[in-house]
Image (cartoon, rainbow, N blue to C red):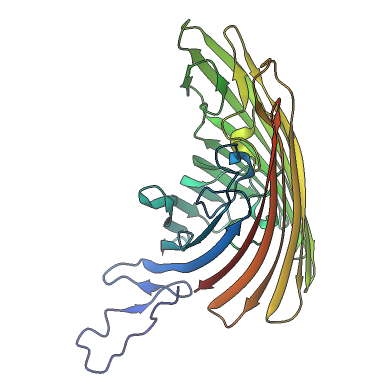
Length: 376
């Protein structure tokens, strides 16, 4: 969002109080060495689903079921709009301190906390972050551009409370580690209590030799502990996820690839059923294996038009759940075209095909056609 950088000083008795901040678009808070930027955007969308009838702007194929995929729907809304505040200050030794909070409007109460974190970076590009942000297992740079948010099957996806540290190895490579808030509720089976005794551990390695090439490899280790509500017995399992990402681009084209493989990774992978990382029976806890990937291509036709096409797939292994119906896989395909009216207004059209496949159950599919416009 564009905000004033210099207010009209004519007739202003306090014209010296408001100054330009340390980074683009910010203002300096009076009496403080702190720069503040207030930003965000308004995004209005209209979409039609051929079968899905759950009014949600973000399309999640894993939520397809017999209860919500037999009627279709038409919806207009702007719940994907965002508002954020970015405050920064630099110490005499060159250390930058940043406080960031961002909200969207997709939660049931209206405003939803999207990100909120503190970040400290020094002159050697060593960065420490604490708060709620995208999990280190993700690689945002390879996720394709979509009208709302692309929920591509086969890519790592999670937003956690965390403590993260990143440091460069040399000019082109860096390594990061993080301790993240665990989620042990993403299991199915007999009634249980999710115990969160230990955090998730994540590490990532990134290579950025130029603006035209990027590669990352990350790994996650989680410690799942559930207590059977009937017997009181606890079960411990170690889950993991390995994620890789790559993009190659030039002035007009970008090719991106993602791949994932792991056990008990449902809560960390797009396209999965977030409540099925494994199955707890009366006498044991079994983890579900998941693997997949996606490919995306972007082309800039000219200064005004650009298009994206992407396909993702996620598959899940069998578990000893006998006749139970559970998640086995999902697919997600989309194609879109965007028109840049000016610096502040973008509009686009998009078609999405998404499907969910169950073990011992039906396969659900849906087509979504949508139009959207974003201001600022």
